[in-house]
Amino acid sequence: MIILMMSIMILIFFISNIVMFISVILSKKSFIDREKSSPFECGFDPKSSARIPFSLHFFLITIIFLIFDVEIALIFPIIYLFKSVNFFIWMKTSFFFIIILLLGVYHEWNQNMLTWTN
Image 1 (cartoon, rainbow, N blue to C red):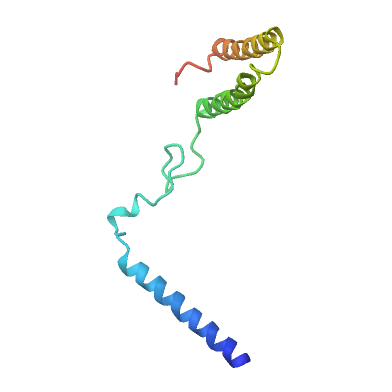
Image 2 (image 1 turned 90 degrees about the horizontal axis):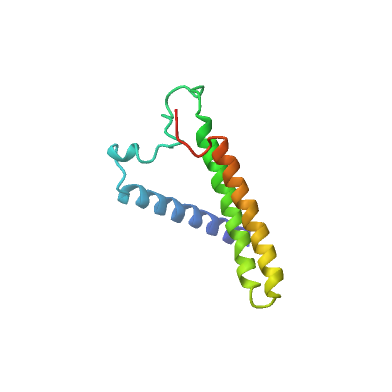
């Protein structure tokens, strides 16, 4: 029984190595494609110093996008509830939610988060 298990493990080892060897031979990667496989993070060169000052505007735009993305996900149930809830309750809830969104956009605009300046 142990011999059978050892032979199966050796067979699996050889099959996996053969498959990896074939994939290396058949792959189309070359030195020209090396730049494509390098990591790209916000325009930084990965081979340069990591202590380059980062623009805070990239971060603010990302946060604004995430906030509005979540708010859009919250609007979908409001649309679904239109048929099953009293119209005036639905209007008040939707109006209140949209006012909060517009106040958030106004605040971001007031803080110059939406203008792209260096």
